Image 1 (cartoon, helix red, strand yellow):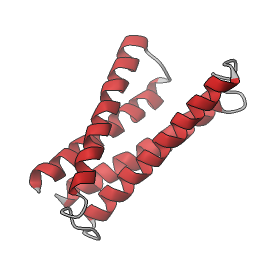
Image 2 (spheres, rainbow, N blue to C red):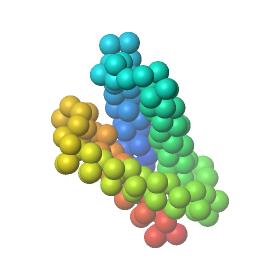
Image 3 (tube, rainbow, N blue to C red):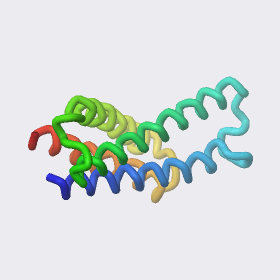
Image 4 (cartoon, helix red, strand yellow):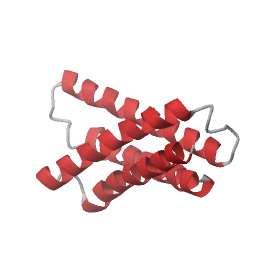
Length: 129
């Protein structure tokens, strides 16, 4: 089980890295969304910061559980909650990429595969417990 959790932690960390790279491309000084009104840019930035924090929480939770620093019984509810949220993110990814073909191919693939792997790791941890 710890191997699956560590893979999930690495997937969440890679998703975080590609998420931060995408932030500059979309909302940076020369980003694609600079033409949006200020209130929409602020909403997107807030969403990005919230999602960044979420990826950090997932990576820390999975990493701490995989290394047995924290027992799975202590964070079981959090693990199930994170699996549900990451599952919803996977649905959003599938919808946006396959319906609208948004983003660059490599970035979209990394941002989409990472949550799938982390969701599987979270679900395997909750089932194994």
